[in-house]
Image: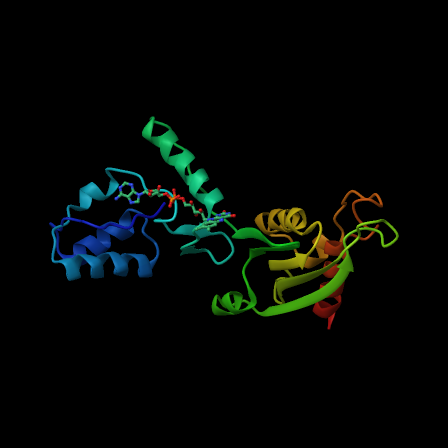
Length: 226
Ligand SMILES: Cc1cc2nc3c(=O)[nH]c(=O)nc-3n(C[C@H](O)[C@H](O)[C@H](O)COP(=O)(O)OP(=O)(O)OC[C@H]3O[C@@H](n4cnc5c(N)ncnc54)[C@H](O)[C@@H]3O)c2cc1C
């Protein structure tokens, strides 16, 4: 977990503080530099040992992104709650850890569900992936079922490894629950080919025999073969 300090006290030179932060697991250069700049600007004193006298959780922290393998500010309620639980357990003498996130979120604008998980195209490129993507349109359930709605799915994947890097979806039905399935595949580092062969439940009220995720992965797989 990462800590942003607002009224620190400095007792060591910046070089030794930088080394201390690195040794204590502050991996992100950006975060170390923000901390040091803040100290310099304020001209206040900082006792390095005090840094670990407490725990930080929630929007004030960076969180480890399992895909980019970098510390990223990801201010979301579920992450804040999970970090809070870890901090609470450790305050009570436990040894809980927070392993990181893939970055999943969903929201609803009137009837439209929008959701994403993982990295977007631009961010994935910044982290050096050989990025490609596939967008498809599909029905949320078998077309003859009442209430079937069109949805858009974008899969973002790495051409070198064939791994899924992220997914974005929009539609009026079944979007938020489907993004969670893809979040699991990101945690498991699954390839597009593996996702295309997943055994999802099928019945007409819930999905077509080929779920939109499977169709998207199938089409992405064709792109990967080119
Ligand atoms: C409109 C909106 C919608 C959102 N919807 C979602 C969503 O659907 N899903 C999702 O995952 N995330 C959502 N978020 C983000 C989510 O709310 C935050 O990530 C989460 O609340 C962060 O929790 P936190 O405990 O770190 O901070 P907060 O919930 O902001 O809690 C901080 C608390 O500290 C108090 N405080 C501040 N300064 C002081 C002080 N000096 N002394 C004492 N108390 C102080 C504040 O009053 C506040 O109560 C939404 C955020 C907003 C603004």
